[in-house]
Every structure is written in structure tokens, then in C-alpha cells.
Image (cartoon, rainbow, N blue to C red; front, side, top):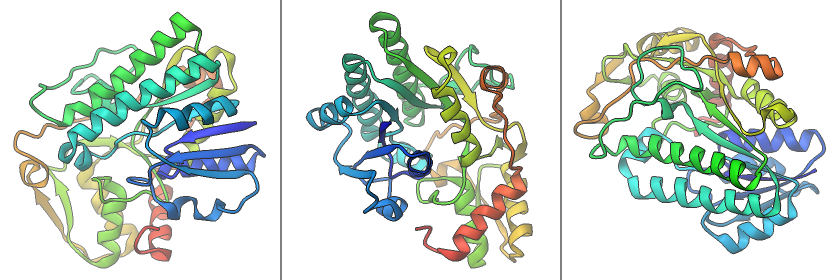
Length: 324
């Protein structure tokens, strides 16, 4: 098939492009190379079935040409990373809402099967775990820019459902939960690569807040297996699915695990949220997915545990200290 991947030079997008090429598809990546990186897709440049189009996700004329030429569209382009979201809220809202509006509108116009990448952030400050797809969302005030990301991705989902119900857009929505692996950068607040880089350099590992907040980390390869399976399953159209692991760990214990598995002497340093991000910053205490729905539809399950994930990230950064 001819497949379009927006945000395909990013961490998840580049792994997806690789998987699609491996299965024999023609792959076009659209990316502005801001949070994505050319190094992520460098191995594919020159491949006879790979094209890179460098442009903004709001470039409607270019997007229309590429959507029209594609059989399927994977829309991953977004402003991501807690630090980026806090520092550049305008970019977050415009990219995530206006860009997605353009992509979904074009996919509906040409009736292209579409995968919309969403996020566990849409659950906001919900405390009852695990999170089910039909759970309520509890979002913080508009005065705190961190919630702009959650709200923008919620609006993306509303747009996808609207196009599905009103214009018959064949769309699948997936909510990623802390997907990690090689090629992920730490510069926008991504916690695991940031910890690994600090540990390998013997530098203090900064933990934001108390470190008692918990997350569930899943390997990008397992998540993409679920994504590709859902795109092939007719029952998934018009539905939303959590994709992630249920192996819960505190951020403090994650840092200790990284130190242990790297053999590092790095000390742990606790940094208040307001110092790391902004005054009044809010975080979620726990974030645990229920993946029963995806398991029932496509037998989704994760295969690599947290130790295995950490080891893969460590191996990547030992070979490429800059993360490239």
C-alpha cells in the first residue's frame, strides 16, 4: 500500500515508517523536523519506497496532494513533551488542533483509512485506575498551560468521531501510554531517555516533584504491533483504544532501576515542579491503562518488560550518546 505518516520523523513515527517499509509498503513521511529528527529517518533516505516531505502540518495544499495519493494515513504529527507544551502553548494548540483538522478533513474528503494518535493525557487528573476508554476526564484550569495539550488531543478525538459519524471517515483512535524505546529524546521532558543519558554520563538524575507519581512504560515495538493490528481490523473503525503496559512504577523507582541497570554512580536529585516547569504546574499522580478492549479486538498485549525496555534504551544511548 501507499501509506502517509505525518510526524514520521519523530520517535514513534520513525519506528512506524520502518515497520511499514519492512512489510513492503510505499511510505511518505510528512514532518517539519522540529521535534522530529532527520537522524531518525536517515537510514530510509534513498530507499526506493520511501519519501520525505518537509513541511508544516498546516500546509493544506501539500497535505491534500499527499493524502490523495495515499491508501492509508497515520496521523502522528503533534506538539509533544511536557516541557515543550509548557514553554510553547500556542504551538501546541495550533499544531494539534488546526493540523489535525486539516488532516482529518482531507482524509474524509478522499475516504482514506486513518489512524489518529491520541494520548493518555486526555484522562487528565482522573484518579480511579486503570483508565477505561469511556472514563470521564478531569482537566485542570485554562490558566495552566500544561492542560492545553490534553484539551487539544481531546478536540482531535472529537473531530475524528465527528468525521466518522457525519462523513463516514474510516478512523481508528489510539491513546498511547508512555511509549518508550530507542530514538526517543529527553530534551522535551521525556523521562526515560533523560534518566538514561544522565546515568551513562554519571550526572545527577533529576526527578521532578516527589517521584512518587507512577507511570506504565511500554516498548514502542509492542505498541506498533497493536496499532497495525487495529488498522487491519474492521471492528476497530470508529473506536478508541488504550495501548500501553500495566507494569506500574514510581518515577523515583524508575530512576533507581536505571542507575542499577547502567551500573551508574549517579545520585538522585529532586527538583520541585515549579522550578522544572512553571509556577502552578500540575501533574497526574497515577496513569495506568486498561487494555481489555484492544486485547478483545486484536489480542493486544505487551511482550517486553520494563527491564528489557531500559536495556534497549541504554544500548541505544551507549552507541549514540547524543540520542541520534
